[in-house]
Figure 1: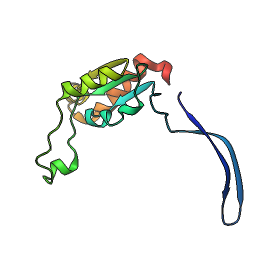
Figure 2 (figure 1 turned 180 degrees about the vertical axis):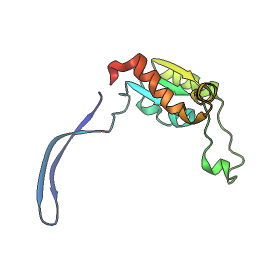
Figure 3 (figure 1 turned 60 degrees about the horizontal axis):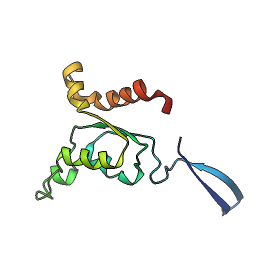
Length: 131
């Protein structure tokens, strides 16, 4: 598990004085993620700075358009091609497993709502040693 450590010399509160040392932060350092669950392609690429050649990405290929595109305030914006997103991720990550988990959910469970759970299931099934 990747963590970052930091030291807080002193933190003053109105009625108490705290001294915290060597805390483990939930924030992942840049280029240090081991396993990334990409629940949406565009959101996954936004986190490119955390990916390295040791990273395994399990990517849901189902597109979820940003709200401003859906409501029409940015009609000129286009969603990047999935193949371009995968190409960029391949250049930076060690391995990518990609499926349209929402479509699998629709085909198998008659609802697209379970796509993210299927994504997590793939991670647990094949990469349980990360958990």
